[in-house]
Length: 177
Image (tube, rainbow, N blue to C red):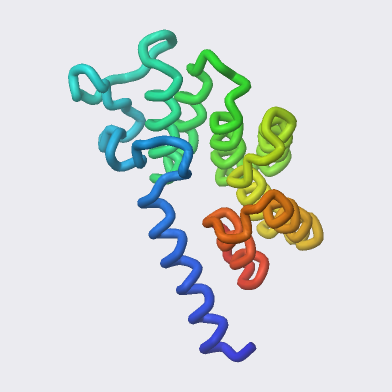
């Protein structure tokens, strides 16, 4: 592949990732930008519409998840982990996925893999976690394991999804999200 094609492919992947971020993860009706606070580490209280510091028992798991997902997408990985630690349902695959994502982005792939694996044990068809796990493998240079996750996404009917396209792009370009 020539340098122009390589750069173009990488830019395509970044623009796909940007578009996907605007769409959220498909498991909630709210996107991160709709339901999150713009103040670093704060949670948008859905009742008062004000940004507040979250404490245990203060918000529903859904509010915590949506805000943590927004923080993760905004690069606030430690804040996302803090919020996700407040959820009551520690076995929600979405929560486990974003714990994995945040730990991976902080450079702790082994902890991330543990969270992704637990998400699969609960819901083997949760392909977003498979995509993020695969991207972790790409970043780590384990292309065989990344391709295995891509195959799992395809096997589970996810070939036309953001999760598949982004992992496929990461495998081809070595650029991960």
